[in-house]
Length: 155
Image (cartoon, rainbow, N blue to C red):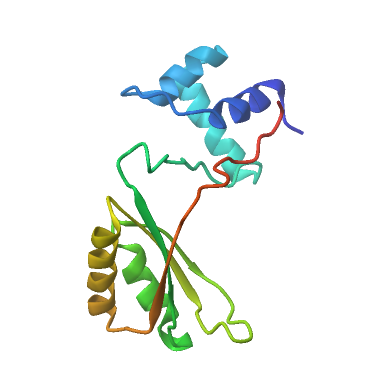
C-alpha cells in the first residue's frame, strides 16, 4: 500500500519539473518534507516497483525544434542491439525503439530525430546512416501534434 506521502510525491513528480538548480528540493518543500526524504522515498518507490521511471516531456517546438522525423530502419536481427545503441547515442535522437516486423512493413528500428528544420534532420539522419552503414530507411515527418501528455495518478 502507498502512504499519503507516497501519493503526494507521485502527484508532484507528475507535474512540470521546477526550473531551479535543485528541483527536488523545491518539490519537497511544497510537499512539506526535506529534499533528502523525497529522494529516499523516490528510491524506495523505485525499489518496490511502485515507480518505474521519471521522465520529462520537452515541448520541442517551443524549444526551437520545428521539425521532427520518425526514421524507420531495416536492421538485421543480429545487429539490432549494437546498431540500436549507436543510434540512441546521438543527442538528436530522443527515442529509439525496436518493433516487430509486420506483414509488408519490414522496418524494425524506429528513431525520433528532432531538428530546427527538415534539412537539419536530414543531415543528422545521413550522419547516423553513414555511422551505422545502413541506408535502408524511410523518413516520416510529423505534420501535427495531437497529444503530449502522460498518465496522471492520484488526482
